[in-house]
Amino acid sequence: MNGPYGLVKERDLFEWLVDKVSAPQDAVEDAKVDNEFSYPDIALATLFDTINAPLAREVVDVVDRFITDQIRGELWVRFYYEAVDRFGIAGDNAST
Image 1 (tube, one colour):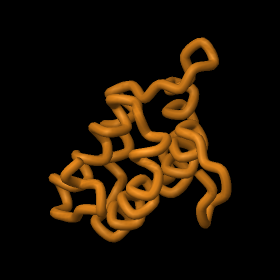
Image 2 (image 1 turned 180 degrees about the vertical axis):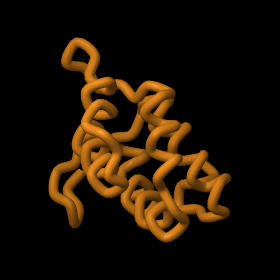
Image 3 (image 1 turned 90 degrees about the vertical axis):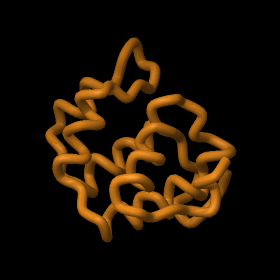
Image 4 (image 1 turned 120 degrees about the vertical axis):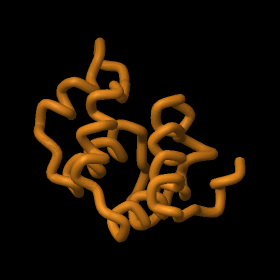
C-alpha cells in the first residue's frame, strides 16, 4: 500500500515506531528472527514503557492505515489494540 510514508512493510513500521519512542537498538535486533519480522513480548513491553498518549495516537493513526493490508501479524495487532485500550484511542479499524 502506498501512503504518506511510501510503501510500508511491517519491519519498516516497527523500526519507525522504535525510532519514535527511542527504544534501545536491542529491541530492533530482538525483533529480527531468521530475517523474518517478529515482535517479541519484551519489545512490546519496552515500547509501552516509553510511549505516551499523543505518540500512541500518532502510532495508531499510522498503523490504522496499514492494518488491513499489511499488518497481519498477531503481535502487531496486539500492539494496536493495547494502544487503543491503554490510551483510550481508536483508529478506523479498531473494531475489525
